[in-house]
Length: 214
Image 1: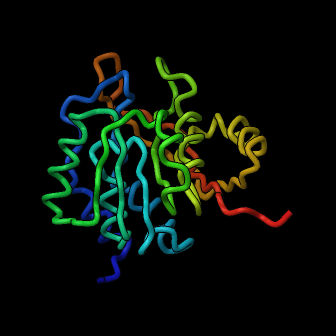
Image 2: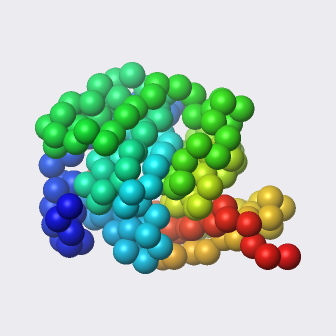
């Protein structure tokens, strides 16, 4: 498989179609091609957690992280999302990229753990940040992800919640490492948004699922 450069990956991900009518209750905001490419390239080149690995993408939306993972040589990437409309866009995106190492499942991510313990090598996600109607949703996603992955979970979380997440990671005996601090450009997607876009400070975090020596 041809080795993709970061710029090539970002350029390809710019072709991924996003939400047609984003749903506020599901906090549907797109992961920008730039952020998605930087996340995936780091996971791939620094930690070798994508190529020939089984990858889960929780709350996959229209599939930008899944498609990027597949392009970087994932053995199989499975996207999970509750929204049929988003998965329809995802399916069309996967077809256009002619990717065969992608699967998708419609389900409530937070009801997955009992059925899918340690099924994947790597879990990648941009979960709902748990604002407005979904308080605590980011942590529910994280708890599910940690039960599914054997190697690592990579996730985006608001920088303002870092201490809380670190406390939970300690509680769950999981090693947490902030890989980067990003400015997440949140475009105006809903009627109540007054500004064209808002920058949110976001942490890109790796949670190691491999058991450390006591």
